[in-house]
Length: 348
Image 1 (cartoon, rainbow, N blue to C red):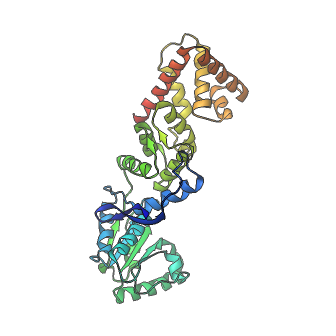
Image 2: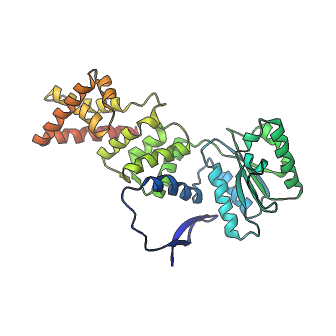
Image 3: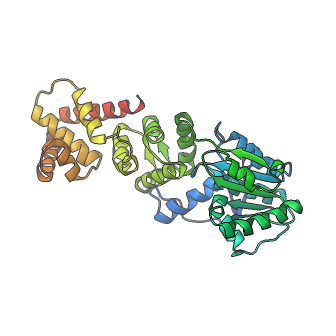
């Protein structure tokens, strides 16, 4: 007997038997590198998250899978679901029991015939924009595409672009025969929902403020967000309390390097200032250094540069606060209050 797995259908996710053997070792709390890099991508390909910016494209892809649309062109920004949608369409066609298996290929691979395919099967081609720059390759691709249109072979294409252009419409043979649908850039609210959707597929749980921070502050696209989540998952699956959230912010700092408004060091220092007048100003500075170095794991040179001291002095200051926490509870309570202030500011 095998296990079960999730597969995308037009009605949503459905669990079907898998051929994977039972009796395997239980999943570890901290996953191995292969699990993080491989398995999430497979699950992403089986699960389509519908939001206003891609709803029309998802609907058209499902209509293509059911045979209501024979010629489909998807246009959208890089990293926001075109390839995933083609893969889910291929899965739906396979579930439908088509006589010939659908194939998802890169457009350049198809034109160079580097992969053998059944000419009668539905064809799904990704990254078609790559063949538009070379006149020779473009013409060869267009001849093959015209042949499929004449023979009424189901064909779906995806183009990377911000919108449907005249160039794309003019490229398609018999453009009026095609269903041309665009995928828009998701809003911040949609990105928040996207993070909430993807994290559980990776076995992760994130605090609300951390989810909002990833969606709002992180530059890039859906692949960037998935890469950030994979990096967190390498450390641990759950990031729910204030301290772990601040630690996650430090781990994700490289992903936010292009956001000039975000500096975790500054957020920590500002949070310390909200606690009121300190009884020991020196210990307050030591707490800030400790939070940056030991909680957020910011490199010593960056902490020293921000605090206006050397790396060694920053480290010594952090160790002073660590000793204060060992000898008394007041220091620990003040650190928790500062961590809460940092996290509380993420949703503003």
